[in-house]
Each structure stands twice: as structure tokens, then as C-alpha cells.
Image 1 (cartoon, rainbow, N blue to C red):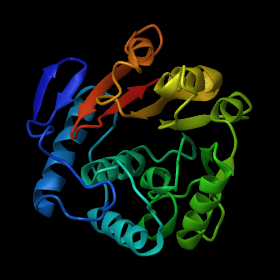
Image 2 (cartoon, one colour):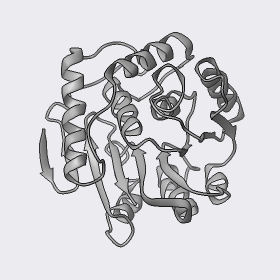
Image 3 (cartoon, one colour):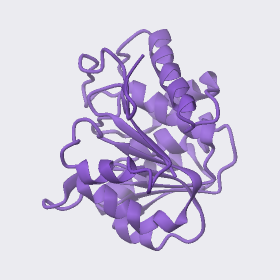
Image 4 (cartoon, rainbow, N blue to C red):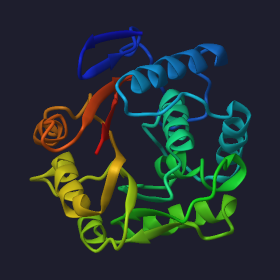
Length: 251
């Protein structure tokens, strides 16, 4: 693991670690290497004070992964196995009672976060885990997928504009996950609009995870500048474990 800059955690093989977006469950490396890579990232996040520790239940994660592979309809995804494990681990460690995920498509990216709180991989009791997808047909598919592994309804999908849902969020928000696309003019720049809309609800110490911090870095520049400003967020780091990336920020 190479912390090349204060705002980056870089895995040396991130450029060569590639997946087939149509086959998300294919193992891309030895399981022990995947675990080691994610564990190294978690240690770096602890050093930066973003996470309190690195411990999560590896067996529960595998139960989660198996259930998703068996029960979810996933036409395609850019969430690599490393990223899936990392998102699950961050949520399993942080244990957000209330989480909002913006731009969830078929629900795979959503459940990679929410799976620590519901379903076969759950390790804590969550209160409300909400995914937002603006396309009704994809929101319906995501809801069907989620219902297959979470009969409780704690995790749910709504068809709506994520900016509106964020602005109307009532009560505390412990974790915000960003993977939405705006119109042609904004694209991934909508991340900042969503974050600012629910900023008042994000608790002290709350986390914001933003996918595509590498491959969409240019469009995300205003967002990345904002979260990396210590006047706005206590800490923020770009985790580069694949060619997509994940910006991890703490309130």
C-alpha cells in the first residue's frame, strides 16, 4: 500500500485490476489478496481518523456476497469485487443507523453498503437504509432485488430525484453514498448538489462515500475540492483500488 499523497491511498496494481462489467461475480484475484488489499486500505483510513478500527466479519461478508450473486438481477456494474468488499467493510465498521444512497441503478451498489445492516451479511441493527434511483424501471428492479434478501423493509429503494430526497431528509444521516448521474450539463457534478442538500443532516463523524473518484475526476473536481477543504469536511481521501475509485470523506 502506497500513501503517495495526503489525499490518496493507492494500490499499485489499480490500473491493471479490471473486471468485465457484465460479469460482476467473477473472481479477479486470490481471495487472500483481495482481503489484504482491503485490510490495508482500512488501516490507512484508521490512521487518518476516518474509521475507528479495521475489524469486520469476513464470513458474514461472504454470506452477503453469495446471497447477492444468487438473488440479484444485475445487468451490469462497475463495482469491482474489491470495491464491494471495501464498501461492506466500511459500513460494517461505521454501522450507520441511517444511510442514504444516491444513484443505485439495479441495487447492487446500494446493497454493497446496506448489506452490513440487513440480509445474510448483517452485523448490526440499522434503522433506515434508503436507496434512490431516478429511473422508475430501475428503481423497481432494485427494490425487487433488495426485497429478496431483506424482508424487513429497513433497506428500501425509492424512485425519485436524489437532490429532492436529500433536501427533504428528516433527522440524522450517518452515511451518504454517491453514485448518481445528473443531466448532460452536470453529470457526476451532481454529487455536490446532493451533498449540500443534506449537509445539515449529516452527523458529526458521518461518512460520505463517492464512487468514480478516479475515472470521473474531471467532472467531480468541484465536489472533490469541496470535500477536501477542511472548512467543510474533517478529512477526505481518494481510495484508488481500481480504475473507478472511491472518495471517502468524514464530516
